[in-house]
Length: 226
Ligand SMILES: C[S@@+](CC[C@H](N)C(=O)[O-])C[C@H]1O[C@@H](n2cnc3c(N)ncnc32)[C@H](O)[C@@H]1O
Image: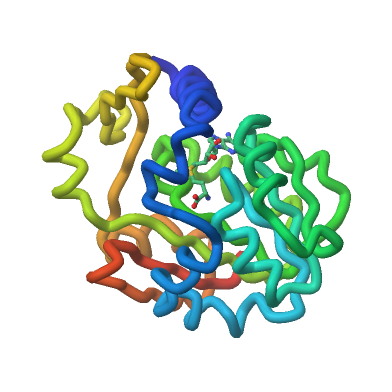
């Protein structure tokens, strides 16, 4: 399957998953989510306070509220109209949040330039051969030397156990996912060690700070775009 087809499969999958996403992630409201992920929030806060932020692949807005509480303004984009509808119903602080449909790989039509780009649980879904394209797209919306914050899952073993998985011809790890509506989709879900990540980011970043949150099964990378 081509990378373009993989990306389109993903977009369709998340549009269908939107009504179940929060339940699947065990997110039951913004307060609870912020409390649960507090160790991560503490590390992120210094980089988002009073900043203009673009949140890429915001989904149903679970991180959007966390960002907007501290930011000057958040533009939260996602490819899924249904996810954005759910986010809109959930989010407060509407004067500091704009929700919009956009493709993470084609952000060049967005006119403003942002201090910070934030993305949660999306980086693992990028086919490896599309990572340069993703950063090129991100560079079009970040001011020079802008801050990037990437939050991702680290529990590879759980995914290997829970889903049928294989590595495809592009070295991407593919999971087979079934939704409650019965539909089955192949989803790219790549996991990186800190060293692999540093190697991957070296052409796009300077000053990488890496945090591992073992208990929360996530890592956080904070760096300036190069
Ligand atoms: C695992 S969800 C993460 C959502 C949210 N960031 C969170 O932490 O709950 C991945 C999100 O990526 C979005 N997505 C997938 N492909 C995309 C693309 N090409 N451009 C923008 N968003 C995309 C999906 O619609 C989905 O909302």
